[in-house]
Length: 309
Image 1 (spheres, one colour):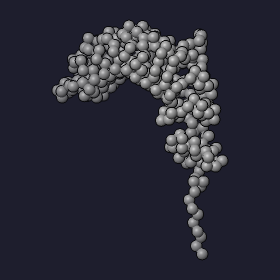
Image 2 (cartoon, one colour):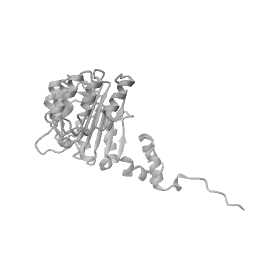
Image 3 (cartoon, helix red, strand yellow):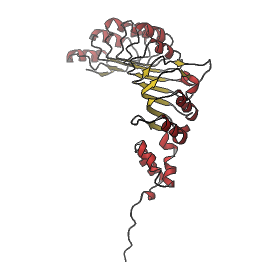
Image 4 (tube, one colour):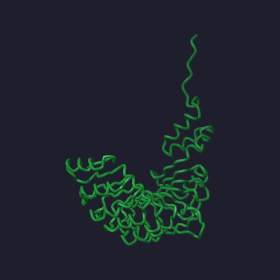
């Protein structure tokens, strides 16, 4: 008599493959998988599944967030994305229970207090803030030698209308900051940018998108931010030919983006490009140059990768 083939079962799969399957599930379904059996419960707690956690699709209560911190996130998490109200107590818990956290992304979150550096994990390298409500929220160091935000290297600010010169000035206290993106920060002024940039001399990457600065902002970039390797402008109506010569001092600049900077001329762009010895990439998308102008820029900068309009 022929042997009856055994029905396929997930239990026959190796744990490495089961972990890969669980990693592809949304967080809610992954947690439900812990109810299948003791084996699956152990798998769901595996640190591999909790290195990069995205909570933004869910409206999670503070109670449930604390539960996740207590039972799943802990020292395993490296990246955490979340939304909703973030209490100071929860931030303190995050600092204590997630000492390995490297990237924190806050979306549509209300922050109405000072963030003391000592409550933030000292391992945090990247902070991303999107569509936040800020009052007098600032980066605040309790004392000299404080860990936490003072070690931050990458900061991204997206669509935070209340972001002002006060916030920018406090960012300038982040002496280790290497990458800064400011997008949709309409209350930031050129004066505030001048003061802050004088303290951000370690910056290597700067992006300014939809910022209402004046043309003189390029003077402060060229004067103070001489270590820049990447400089990106996007939808910045303040940028004109008069501001480009100030960028010639950026001798380490490798990537320059002038996306949708429609007030710039071909000759001013070519003159700047030829003055930057390390320039490798130039993005001019969104500038309505005709084909003849595009060919002229390409011929003038033969060693530069060119992204035309």
